[in-house]
Each structure stands twice: as structure tokens, then as C-alpha cells.
Length: 113
Length: 438
Image: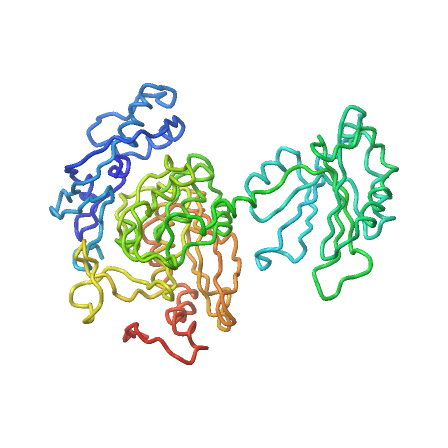
């Protein structure tokens, strides 16, 4: 699972709503997989991210800041969590990640109506 | 100043495939502003064989020659001057000509100001005569209905159908989409470079491959753990279990498209896990029809009848029957919520033909219907390729509006699509529980 994906996922356990994001990530096995750098794609993704820890948004003109884009590219697309868990911050429910694939299935009782 | 025609005429030659998706004739005369645009069209299409700059046409040789005499000479000259090389080909449709007959027709064009040299191996310019003898192989006319003459510009992408063929793909499933159709779907989705494309019923990822080919980054989810992980029984004849290189990522790697793989997740499309927001430029999918793959969603422990399979890794019961109409309304709501404005939803809608009406096509206030193409499956069933575009921002109250719509009730009939599909068969397959609602 890439960190870009982690930023787009939220817990859909019943009752948590917007407090289901961000899922707490515990990684037991991580792999760095090189991916071809595409500055246009990275620049497109930045506004879609929910940057919780950063008080202000990215600096103006980030689309042309190659160093910044390369850093974001590495973090978002090249860090691959192979094994671990995602945890709902509100309910504590765990979603396992195995072979790089998160399993987000919940039973009917657990999900939002 | 000579008033040049701002639109040039081109002849598009379509392949004889998916005839129900288009008007009957394979010959289309298009007005296109520039040759670049014509070439760009051919870089995407898998339905068209070639495009020609149209110099003349007619219903008889005489009409053709007159038409050619009326074509501005200054437009011909750049391709016929003495330093250039060329060749003339002749294609006939629905009739075979002898070599002698072909040569006669080419010779008849000697009145054109060709000054260059003929080069049959590697000519700079290729000209084509196309003769249309109709569409009925049992009734071939003596003379063609139409004759066209033009300068060949480019071929379409039909070789993608062969190079991306499911036959050669590492990882396939029972219902993997034919390569040609997957490219048609990507085109309906207007997929372009740097888009994000999502398939909520990803299966073995066939639809993602076509989008990745056009430069989009791809996401997929599926409720079936084994398929997403590439485990379990193989779909190929003579192969029992799936090998280590059989998963969605490996499929993309096979075609050199691995960099476009974002992620796949095990997830229930009716209960998505995406944070609120608009992420997808296109959602392109082939939802299960309940025939070769079951329609399922996660349920509660109490609702599961005895003996139904459980998903081993997740320990979540996965087999509650999922009414087709609910599934499509969930899909449309999901698309309305997560597509960017102007983004597209492309999906297949299974239909029991004797009862089909246009009103049955699922509707949503945020999505505009762009196209509806039928592909016959059997004598009484077909599936329709539906393309919709998001034209309005999603507001929470929209998700219930379908209950007030006339479209909701007619589509309810499709919940029993599976039974209707088999209604012509004497041996009934009765595995699915009948819901008390039906």
C-alpha cells in the first residue's frame, strides 16, 4: 500500500464519520520500490491530499519546485507498506495489510447506515 | 485571398466489429479542422482501421473522376511533386477483384497530376481507392455503391487488441473483459495522461490496463480476497491453481505499465472506504451480473444462510444477495460523490431484452447520460455500455432522489436478471436464495 492511498482512506465504521481519518498506520514490513518520477502527476495529487500535520498548505508555486515534488513523489509513491495494519482512530477497529493489499471489509453491523 | 475551407474532409474506415455500437456503414466522411486532429483521433481508436484525406468520391467511376477534377490542385501538389515517392492501393469491401481489374482502376487515375516516382516498398505517400460493395455477402452488386479516393493519413490502434489480448495475459478471471472492449471503455471515459481511474469491481484488472496504456494511474477494489491477491483456482483451461505471477500488478508489469499501478484493496463497493472528496477522473467498471460471478456484499452474521462460503482471511461473511438495482444505484451515488466535475462513469448494465426500455437505465441528478450501446449476449439478454458524465456537484440529499424517480421501479425487474437469463434453459440453476422482497 502506498502512502498516497493511506491519505485517501478513511474508516467507515458506523458512527465515526469524518473522525475515521486518518487511519493509524502500523507497518511491520516496508519496501521502497522506485517509480518513474512524473512531476505533473505529483503536482496534481498535492491538492487532493489531506495534510493534517502541516499548519499551512504547500508553498505557492510548488508545481514548479522540482526538489519538493521529488520528495513528495518518493513519500507518496515509492514507500510501499507490505505488511501492517490500519487502525480506525475512533473505534480502534483494525484493517490488516497483507502482501501490500489492505483489507477494508467490515460486517453489516460495523458499517455506517 | 483565397477562402480556404476551414474544415477538411476525411474518410474514416471502421472495422466490422461491434456493429450495434454505431451506424451500419463502415465508411464515414468527417469534417476535421486539421490533419493533426485526425492523427490524434487515430492514436486512440480501436474501432477504426484507417483515416484518409478525402480527395474525391462518387457513386460511379465517372462521379469519382469528376469529384477528383474538382479537388483543388494546390492541395494535391505537395504530395505529387517530382521529388516524392508514392504508391496507390485499392481496397474493395464485400467483393474480390482480380489483379487485372485492380490495375485497370489504378490506371484510370492517370489523369491526376502525379509527378513523383512509384515506390511499392517504402513510399512517402500512400493513396487509396476504396470501393464499397455493400454489407450483404449474399448479395454482391455488379457495381460498387460508392467509390472513394484519398491520401492515407494513419491507422487506428487495432493492433492493441492483439497485443493486449486476454489469451496472452498472465492473470485472467472467468469474466475478464475482451481487450478491444476495455479500450473502448477507456475512450468513453476520456482517460488521459495523469488521470486517476478507479474500478470498484476490479477482478483481474483488465479494465485498468487499458487506462494505464493511456497514461492514467489506476486504483481497483474487489470484494473477493482471492482475486485481488491472485490466489485460488485458475481460470485457464488445463491450469489448476494460479501461479506466483498472477495478480493485477503483474498484469500491468507484463505490458510495461507497472508505474501506473497505485493500489488495489479488498473492499465492498457498497461500503467504500474513501475519505470524502473528489479523486477520480473516471470510474470504469464491469459490475457482476450474478451469472458467472455472484453479486455479493458483506452482511451481518445473522443474515447468512447455512453453508455459504466465508472469506477466509477477513472472517467477514460475504454472500448476502445484492439486488442488482441496489448495486447500480450505489454505483451511481458513489460516482456522483467521488468523480471530479466533468469526470466519467463507464459501466455495463445487463438487460433482459424483451422487457428493456430506456427508462430502465439508472439515473442520478448529478450524472448526465452520454451514451448507451447495446451488445447482445444471447437471444433474450444483452448488456449495455453506459457512459455518464458528472455535471453537478454532489450534495447529500441527492442520494435519496432515485427513490422518487420513475426509473427506480422499472429497474426493479432486473433483480431477477439471473433467472431471466436462464429462463430459456430447461435445467434451472437454483442456488440463490430468493429474498422475501421479490
